[in-house]
Each structure stands twice: as structure tokens, then as C-alpha cells.
Length: 374
Ligand code: SAH
Image (cartoon, rainbow, N blue to C red; front, side, top):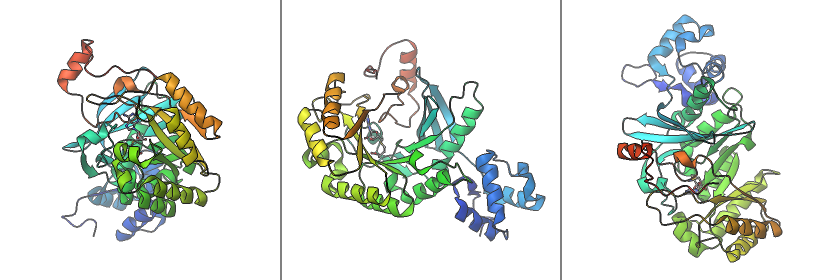
């Protein structure tokens, strides 16, 4: 029962419409109150119940004791030379996650995290190095978007509004579906952020049952981190391939796309020098994807301290892309953004940069492999 003396306040930031209605019903309130509260929180960015003037004083005072609107706290805010901005959010006393804002013309994309750390151990990803700590709850996932919007609105040079959200930050979203689904519901709902389905993308390393559940519960745009055209190589790069190998993964993708007319599945493919980037790999990939509504995003590898991989050469990436295009597979090379602030794909580590490193950076000493540019 909300409001009993021992229960902690309910964070309303993570409640989609149905849960908000239930919560307010438990306080004896009518369903239309949910609409009012959602609008205050998400349209007017209000976290203070006393400012919610159409609610009535008794309800406002009650909410103050049993509920809260609490976003993760920003502990670091860095802006890249290319305008990309990265926030480090504290989600509890021991844990931080990162979100990245990528302005591009009229479009503003926010990349959000779904877990603290990651359990999947992909060998080329910085997040994997810290291991898995815990799932984020729905309020912590939505809170990154809520806080980013608020910070941008208060900035002198805010850049475009957030028009797109990608769950491509830290963590594997399909291993945290019970929190990710309500967060997605809020992103799509007109009483929440009101984003179109095609502007919200969930990226997975290939959790097959999760892809099926997503299709059923909240189909948004799907991106799949493929990275290899055959199981022997993918077993090494993306170890959950041993549980759900490529054939199984691609048939789940085929079903997913079949349920959503005109939707393509994006396949991400990180370009690793001399590992997965030969013309033969490209031909095998094209063959694998031949009967799927697919598009391929080639991601130049972003290095991080301690990695054994190198980024493929630009000519190699271009040749790989051309082979796919010649086989009628829609392909683009993703621009590398924000690598000077460790905000590029796979560089999110959720740590405050250690002091020694910051000092070294200020002195112009490079302590990480030099970024190789987009
Ligand atoms: N767990 C999810 C989402 C997080 S990773 C997934 O695997 O899709 C988001 C994307 O960044 C994935 O495609 C991932 O493979 C890619 N990525 C990870 N490390 C990278 C790196 N060092 N350089 C470039 N891309 C990387």
C-alpha cells in the first residue's frame, strides 16, 4: 500500500499510463488524474508536486509523502569538439551509467544505457570490461532522457531537440525487458515523450527469446549486433552466439520484421582490422542477409585502453561496403562521433575518468590509444 510509513516513495518517472492509473487508484484517485500527472512530469518537466496546480492541495500534499519524481544525478558533463555530449549519471551510491547526445542537423539522438555494466563479454566492447552490476529500473532508463531534455533546455547552445532514442548505451536491453518495456512505453506515449516507433531503436547482441518478446510487447526499431557472418568467428566476438547461433538469430529477425510491414532490421557490424573485414567476410554476410529486410551499419571500431583490436582501414571499410551494396544490401558506414570524450560506440564505461588520467590529459599526454578520426 503506497504511503504506509515504511514503504519508500514511488518514483513516478518510471510509470507508464496504466501503472500511473493503478498507482493513483490506490490513493483513491480517478483515472484522469494520471493524464494530468503524466503531462506535468513529461511535457512540463516538473518534478515538484506543489507546482502541479490542477491537482488539488490534498492530493499534492499526499503525493509529496508517498511519491517522488527523481532522475539520475549528473556527475560529469563533457562536450566533444563535434558537438556530441556525454553525461555520467549516478544511479545509486556505488553506480554510474552514461548517456550520449548526438546532434546531427535537425536530428538529436540520445543513446541511453539499460544496465550498469554488461554480462555479455563481447570481446571488443569497453563496457564488458567492467562486468555486470545490475539492471536499471524503468525510472533510471527514462530518467536519462528526462534529465537530458531538461539540461538541453537550460543550455545556452542546446542543439536540436531529442528526436530519436537508441538503447545502445551500456548493457543488454533484452536481458532487462521488465524495466525496458515500461520505459519504451513512456517514450512512445503521447502523454510521455511522444516519439514515433521508428525513432526509437533497441540494439541487442542477439537474445533470441527477447526479440520475440519485444515483438509481442512493444515493437520498436530493432538493431542487431551481428559482427560476423559465421558462427566460429561470432562465438569469439559475441559469446552469447554459443547460446543463440546465427541461423536462430536471423530467423527471429525475419519473424520480427514480418510482423512490422516496411520495417527493416539494422545489422551492426564493427569493423575490426584483419578479424572480420575481408572481402570474403563481406560476401558471406551478403549471402546470409539475402532474404531479409535488412540494412547494415558498418561501425569503425572505437579503441579503448587495453584492447587487442584495431580499427579497419578506411579503404577496407569502403571495399566491404561496396561488396554489400553490389549484392543489394543497403549499407552505410556509421560516422564516429564523440571519440575525443570516449562517447563513441563501445567506449562507455560508466566511470569518472581517474584523476591521474585527467591530469595527464590536461598536460596533453595521451594515455589512451589515439582516436583515429571518423
Ligand atoms: N548490448 C547491446 C547494446 C549495447 S552496444 C548490443 O550489443 O547491441 C551498442 C553497439 O556498439 C553494438 O552494436 C556494439 O556491438 C557496438 N560496439 C561495442 N563496442 C564497440 C567498439 N569498441 N567500437 C565500435 N562499436 C562497438
